Image (cartoon, rainbow, N blue to C red; front, side):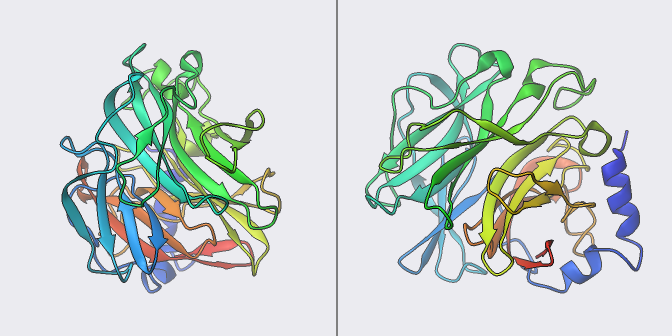
Amino acid sequence: MYSLHFLLALFLSFSPLSFSSPLSKRTISSHPVIASNFPDPAFLEVDNTFYAFSTTNGKQNIPIATSESFTSNWSILKNRDALPKLPKWTTGNIWAPAIIRLPTTGLFTLYFSGTSETDKSKHCIGAATSRTILGPYTPSPDPLICDLAAGGAIDASPFLDPKSGTLYLIWKTDGNSLGGGGPCGNADSSHSTPLQIAPLNPLTGTSFLANATTILDRDPKYDGPLIEAPSLGYDQGEGVYVLFFSSNCYNTEFYDVSYAVAKDVMGPYVKAKVPLLVSGDKGGRMKSPGGAEVSADARRVVFHSNRERGDSGVREMWVGEVRVRGGVVMI
């Protein structure tokens, strides 16, 4: 059944008040910049070159792509794997990497989710480091987050707060992996899927300085069985933190790119009334868009969209430029 969240967005997409119409005329790329499978992308600019990393393609644990322009000319680096050697705690199936360069040491720290060796129905989050952007990255021997009783953890995303200089990690507790029916679990709304945040050691980014805080959780009336894929940016001009996330199940038409805003990094975060991107946007070219990763300054974003409607087998990478006006996000 369609969620109320999705039906509302779909209705608005055909009305004069729709976000979709002005969005399509703004600064989303007119076509996928990587027209092959490159799901859950993350990116980082280093020395005027952009580097993107994605969920495993079955050959590389973490594929890498590069571009000198961000908006075009992306090339996947063949036979290049950012994480060729996995730690013993995971059997593979690496999802949703994210990366940051630490200003204190220049170290690159890569975060990823991998299937737990202990419970192969769940994922844990790991961290790996390198002195160069292309790696190879050396993983820490133990997972950074692995609460299997809560469903495990996925979708880690680092954020360096420009206001305080504090390094944070945001992630999803994967409660829907505990069951509950439906294509992604939790159709019975029996489990929580909170987005959490905690401060990291600024020297390595591979350990925490304090316990986690929940900054957002799903509303079953609007978000379906889950929210996931958090990514945080700060718009200095507006003085607001923008938390991107996706709701509903990734392999359904209801998957989306949504956002919430707050004046403080720890919240409270207020969700937008409708998603930012839904299936049908961009003249029908958006098909289950999701997995967005925003730059720390909330100016650029990458995300994926299915090549074919109803088929998540090939999720192509798109890019956009972000604008925030009066607490409203546009791309």
